[in-house]
Length: 165
Image 1 (cartoon, rainbow, N blue to C red):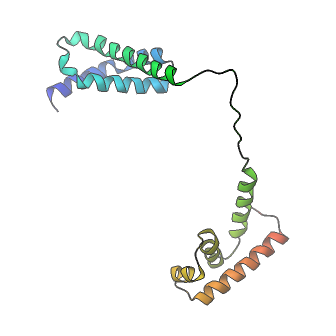
Image 2 (cartoon, helix red, strand yellow):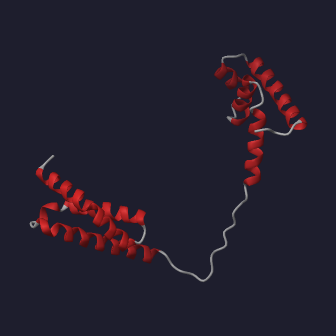
Image 3 (cartoon, rainbow, N blue to C red):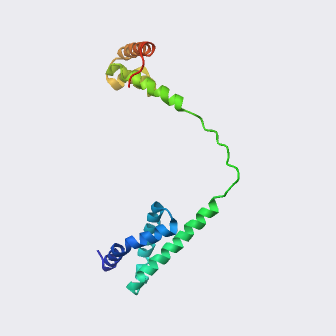
């Protein structure tokens, strides 16, 4: 570690808490204050050799904090526009789809492992019977019959019982 790095690290250790309080007061949000402090310390580190008087370092970083906070405020204020009316946004309710998918997964979990695997590969992953057979190391006929038995069992479960989770 160079002397410059050691001096900067000592400065940060000694002053970080106070500078963070200052940043929080400038921004008003503790999370954005941490970002502001990190940005200010980065800018200070880049130009650390400009500081001839170590007693002036804290004032230098405070000035960077204030200027950066002002820049952020200007950027934010120029990009947001207040309005009397909020725009109407149509949002599709997909909760029924999600509930249905959860129910299907609950029924699938009741199937034997091999049937469940074949059905997931065949219909969820959209693989052909040949691809399922190759992936599982079984014949195409076995993949086809396993899928058929799995679908039949799935239909039976869905007709005869409440899903349990």
